[in-house]
Length: 336
Ligand SMILES: Cc1cc2nc3c(=O)[nH]c(=O)nc-3n(C[C@H](O)[C@H](O)[C@H](O)COP(=O)(O)O)c2cc1C
Image (tube, rainbow, N blue to C red; front, side):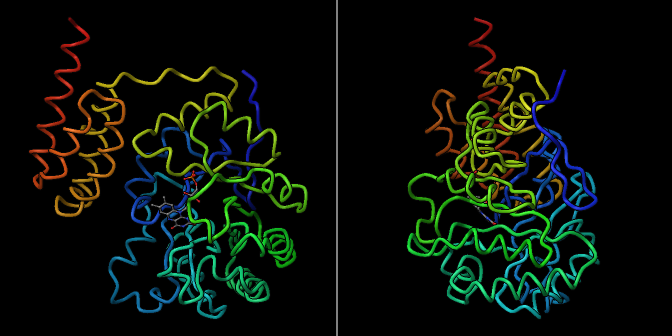
């Protein structure tokens, strides 16, 4: 069947399908990236990593873990944040040595923890600094460098076209736009008109991001804006099948139907939960998996009660028992 879109090309990487998992701090660790990749992702991005923290990496086990890879999820883009061009360049060299296929620069994070020290989206308040950071990182590594940003700091500061044009000038090889301002955080809607305008303003690949939560909508946004790839974030949590459905459309097929509630929970507990516990250990996996299970439970009868029980359960085997009991009751209901 004929594919409906082209691969995303970033330097030597021919990425198929042009479907990218959004970097999500506290979520897209190497286990998650490897679990989600087979659903049909072309590219995954690490959680954002502080360039400053990497300077002290020998003492920061967690930071090193953040840049670690599974192998399965290659190519991997490692995302860095920071406001100092020299520190960013050093950090880029380091993550490249640790196996990054692509280095991504974060000009998008709106969290006060990051912006109060001029990182993430705060960089967009100083376009010259953005350029200096991008130039330093491009000069430091022998792999493609990309950049992810928001529209600007606020409505009165929509600098995305200028920053992307400077990115192109210094050798950045692709740019992702989450079409909200920093001040917006997650309020309102992502404005895809801006993504379309960006695509028309630069020659490097553009990846569109924001509020894609349904396969046909995602394809329509991609077509209308003309972007080279789309990036999915929140809507994939508890629903990795969205990724497969979009890949189906990209490969010219009807999207596969959603698995049944029992099948979804079976994946959540027998694959996702089990792998997280094996790889992260019970004490880290149990709290991390609470938010994932809460999302997998969406649309399941008595979800609120089940979520509440899971929230108050600390042992992995008890959580497994609760979910397995739910799967059995869903299967009995179908059989009856
Ligand atoms: C929990 C969470 C953590 C995030 N962490 C990062 C991050 O580390 N780096 C980044 O560039 N964006 C981060 N983002 C933003 C997402 O990559 C994405 O741009 C945003 O969620 C919009 O896409 P969506 O509507 O598909 O979720 C994060 C978003 C969420 C919800």
